[in-house]
Length: 360
Image (cartoon, rainbow, N blue to C red; front, side):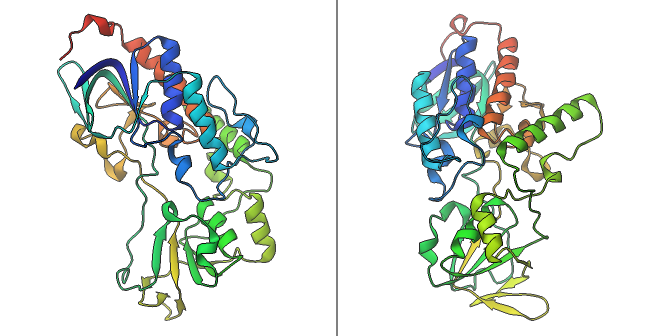
């Protein structure tokens, strides 16, 4: 099976849906290919207590604000999944799922997305696959010797799974702090970080973070002094659970261990800590395996872009992977704003209607 359209969007999460909204408004013929069997993007895979950093009214996709969740100031992941599913239906977006893209290849006049359900040919491709499918776990000596349970953030679900255990939480970001906060209520926890944790001021939430990221991008475009952006505020948002953990005195972080042992972890000074489980809250990498045939990645795994457009392959756009593809583009509101400029650029470049081309 071969399909032809103006634009193929790879990924049906928040960034892909935002792109679909603007592609529909631009009158372009497009398809959204999503590997997941159900709508909701990465939000359907988070841990049970995962929430947004901002109230619903400050976390919209374009066109339709997220409805408030009764009784909740900060919406749960389940509420976000429901919103994304309804958003998809509201705008009748052509999402095909489950369709897994194995590779994007250059054609003579287009890009071809080869999938497990045939090939889609398009004059432009928007990659919006996010990072959730590419968890990162650093390598440490003795990792294979540890006899306890090791898991990454992607596999964590609830604190009761660790009740009565000795747990080491690794990482200095939001996921680590939030997971530590709740696991410490049922288990003996040790928090280890590669550098001293940096807590943001109380009252800073997703609304503030987006505004700060936007101001930094504006400063960059004007060539004025770099404000430091979100990183200047810290790494950890003081959500209610983290504040409560601070008040219990459990937010004390140890330096990073140097090796794992059969029964736990050890430091260079010879001290050791016994552990039943290690939770690696060590982040993610962009999920870009499907773009390997284009050979675009450079040092650090990043594809060089001008805005969201690939410099080496101008028919390819990258949306929603973080600040390198637009300020706060990995957030709901940020994905929407970045998608708007992305689609405007695509619409300007596509001047020949798809109907004028012959099907392969």
